[in-house]
Amino acid sequence: MVVVKNVLCSFCGCVCDDLEVSVEDNKITGVKYACALATEKFLHSQEERNPDPLMRADGGFRKVGLEEALDKAARILAEAKYPLLYGWSNTSCEAIKVGIELTEEVGGVLDNTATVCHGVGLEAIQDVGEPTGTLGKARHRADLIIYWGCNPSQAHIRHTTRYTAFTKGLFRSQRKDRKIVVVDVRKTVTSKTADLFLQIDPGKDYELLSALRMAVRDMEFETEAVAGVPVEKIEELAEMMVSCEFGMLFFGLGLTQSSAKNENIAAAISLVRDLNLKTKFLMLPMRGHYNVTGANKVALWQTGYPFAVDFSHGYPRFNPGETSAADLLVRGEVDAALVVASDPASHMPWAAVKNLANIPVAVVDPTLTATSLLADVRIPAAFNGIEYGGTVYRMDGVALKTRKFVEPPPNCLPDVEVLENILHKVRSLKEVA
Ligand code: SF4
Image 1 (tube, rainbow, N blue to C red):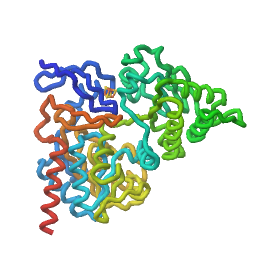
Image 2 (cartoon, rainbow, N blue to C red):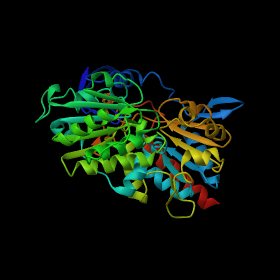
Image 3 (spheres, protein in one colour):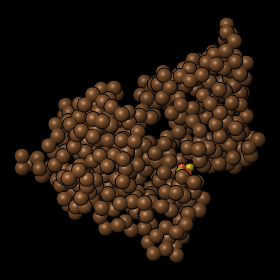
Image 4 (tube, rainbow, N blue to C red):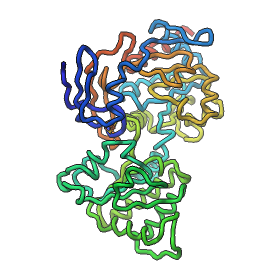
């Protein structure tokens, strides 16, 4: 048995880098220090997969060779007029880079899962900038942590033990050295551990952020409550904010997806800016998939835009609402799709999924997802961080390298190689045409 130390977890945006994985006869037999979500992935990913390339036939699927599956995926893209290449948050930066080249080659749209989660925050950042820092700063320096619209105790399970409430940092060594605040529409597991919990009316985040900006500037209220929160509580939180030495605001989909969307994030950025006139304050999004940040970064540095990038005019264009995946699918504007390391059939609106089922679809994914069940061809891939290594970006934008420690099944190439193959085949098909 071999014990591999300091393994990175390729599950959520925390990308914990301290796991210990036991391997025997190319099988993962144990994992230490992982949370429940990661333990499940490491212990069962090898067995709960279908390693066969599949192609639709006679109302079902038939097993095919890898080469045939790659040919089919390439033909779907080469014959399309306006294909969508979607997903990218559960794969390596190297694969995403090839995906962008492929999208440009076929004149399609490249979109990643940020389009339905933190994309609006990225729009706000492009408008007004970003007062941000690393998770290390939270761990070592923050004496005030605010979780807004997120529930790390269940979604990013080790966030509080590695970076905030229950960690030992350089300058904050115990729980009592920090204050924890939760703002949410309901009580959560995280809110039970908080020093202050503000229960807000659904969809009223912008109002509460604006009220906090007023309180931070010592302005008076002519009302008893804002967004369902009594003014005394708002003033209490504002006082905690201005009197802390180092504050961090972590925000989740409860903020990005409530009614004002990108304006919520712009308001939060403005609040943090106001606070920086009085103390030190930073903010960070709680990114979900382990490399959704990488998907945005690679798209940004290659095209100038972090998601929803349209190449149909021969140059990159970005106009969320027009060029974003869900909108394109709902309006039935794309005529084919390549889905990589993602499952839009499980997460997108029904109207989008219905139209996805009516166009040719190729899927590249280690697991058999709902999307692969409506695809014309499904190409299995190796697991990043288990069966091959690549670059990923943690939720705070720190780049890390995952490692390989078991061999994938014979048909399962790293998705960067799958995509390079498809790109090569698309170019050959276009030359012949
Ligand atoms: S918190 Fe996230 S990155 Fe850390 S072990 Fe759990 S799933 Fe993996």
